[in-house]
Image (cartoon, rainbow, N blue to C red; front, side, top):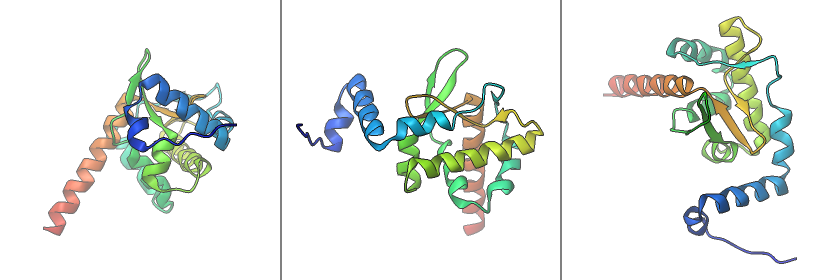
Length: 164
């Protein structure tokens, strides 16, 4: 067996196919590839395009679970639009890194809480805020990403107004 050490800059400057391969290898070594699909939504569920009102309504349902709030606002960042109809793709590893949670299981737990909160808000047990693919990505509707970003910007603007 041979080990190779790569710097963050080397990984960032690698071609996309190489970065995906490295990501896949790391996730497989950490056992993440088996975790994400197990948490995927059931076939009877569907991804919902959340409005600003939906996001605002689900916040009080998760506010006692601060890591879930942090994970929710990770979706205010731009994602990668893929497929038809388009979905926004976010790497679970990025969410893990940005939220400083300890493992992918905690990220999945937060996403499950967000999914349950949205199902409650929509009064539809099959409604899902997000889904997962087999490559370690979280998938949301583009409108959902825009709505989370709008709520985040509004909250930030209000905080700046009251602080000033």
